[in-house]
Length: 152
Image: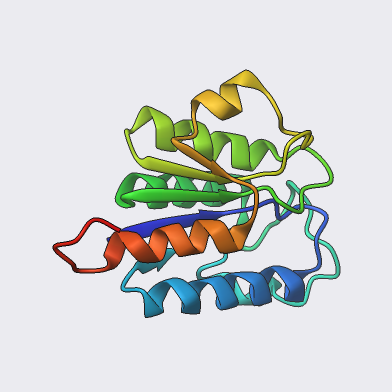
């Protein structure tokens, strides 16, 4: 099963973003997932002090490249996991990824506490399941890949 990981990136330090995705990727690969994430192939910008929402000139990080590749990854995935648990400002990119996932009938899983800056009817309606913690979402995802005749 392929899973696409999304979380706010703009305004965050490059190294922190890469560490987050590396950790979550290893957790999900352990459970049998093929993981797709927006930082794939972007090692050149790993050390940026703070990511910005637009204006990169590297071929893999132009506005068109970012949008097209992320959309392509959502199309390829079975599941979209959107983690807004640490969002401090609205993420337009995450909202696009969630909307694409919903429109394409992907299993959309949202991690978001109540009263998050993204709390909106569209966000809830585009999300199949909402968890308040990333750990709860990962636990749920691990159950989806378990091979058992028993209902868990």
